Length: 519
Image 1 (cartoon, rainbow, N blue to C red):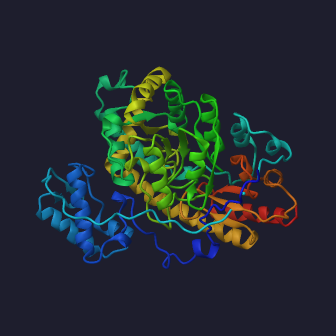
Image 2 (image 1 turned 90 degrees about the vertical axis):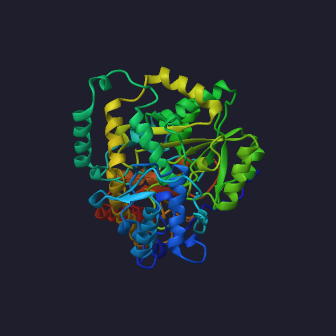
Image 3 (image 1 turned 60 degrees about the horizontal axis):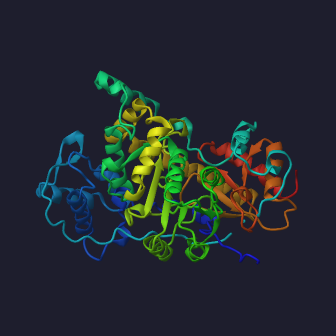
């Protein structure tokens, strides 16, 4: 039966997404998922103080944690500094926080009584919509049926300009901060800390991750529930084994969706049936019709379309999960956002039905092979057993260094620097696309580390053939058809985070020539 055409949205018209930043400022902040646009009518100070009070009372801001600097939080929220200063002053008068000069404003063991009314933090907003090739054959690397070694061969293929998605700006890795943290760890680590430790992860990192998730992703988790894993790939492997133990042998996946993750899950399970994605996110009606018991999703920034799971669709999905479904939530690059407010993690709404995966691969570097996994109680023992017998735990020293980076605030400072750098590179790519590929439609520009392009018909090439021709010209990209099994328009997936603006412009110019038939 013919598949209905799909629209992916958000459609990011280049002049809107890359235009004057003063006209389209970043809205909201990752800190406690605050968005002043959703504040009720009245005093912004009352609204902010209420949210801070509630976070202290319910443990999302535990004793000893530092609040963001007033100037920084005011800039991120787009409010006057006086609003933040007055909110902090109120909490200080109530004994919930204390100012420590250069040490910042710190939460103390304050009253845990009524937190007072707070308005909604704000629903996930999403931009508009549009549209992708069934697998097509091209010469060489891109003419192959995707297999488990495909990405290894792609990484090894030489190219002048690498626009493949998936990596942050690795040159920006905070080497000095890492070395400082490592020295502190080694200076203070007891000899016993060099022995076999807890295979679930060091207590320090599990506590730091729990605090990070509470502050930045709206998730309340006990450190005891955090499992440190060797990246999202191992998280999927552990989940695959645990799901088989409870009789789940198929996990539905988004389409289009990550080819790499699909292959990882497919290694452990019998099948990964596709579920279409449209402008609102995953089609829950199609998921129900499929009869799937579990689904792998990227709801905060769908890969590769960039769609944010819409509010109504989110409610439908949570109802599907409450009715017995299981969600595997990959929160792979939720920190990297530029033109939209933060999107709360699904796990925060329904922890008993959502397995949550996060990593530092897109925040620091994939080479660290460090991530975390939260699972519902019914899967916990099976997942822990799989981790124990997989490797007895991740290396402890990098965990301790990462915990130090998180606790010191260095990781948040690094994220702010990355956002500025990535935004400039994203804008450079959109400008180049507007110039050299004016008929292409850009998707997913409000967040992430890549853009998805859909191309009009009549180019004379499949997207795989276009990617092959680009590689022959020294430009490496991924065809959209790699990530899809259902019919859709042809397209490309282009990474920008790890490429200087000049090279981005040069690479997109080559793509433009090829689309116009010049190569």
